Image (tube, rainbow, N blue to C red; front, side, top):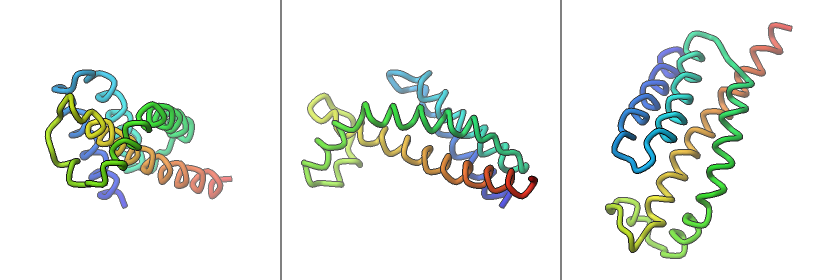
Length: 124
């Protein structure tokens, strides 16, 4: 399990690094770096349920702001658009990609929150 958590941490760290070319890099770097730290801590058996909860709230709130773009993307009926470049004519493509990244972070938070609660219950 340690190696899987380290792999997850590495993927999130890499995701943070490649955000430097984004129009709002510091927000994305912060959220991906937080996910990397949480996964890295889990690799060594340390779980912070409050940190996971805080990151989850951030992700859910941020995803809510992107939901309109996802709806617009889904209305196009062409999943292949996710593989196209960014354009002013199709802002929903980038919004959907961003939503997906946050969804992956939220999924990892759900797993680490569950593992952290399980570890706390076993210790009690």
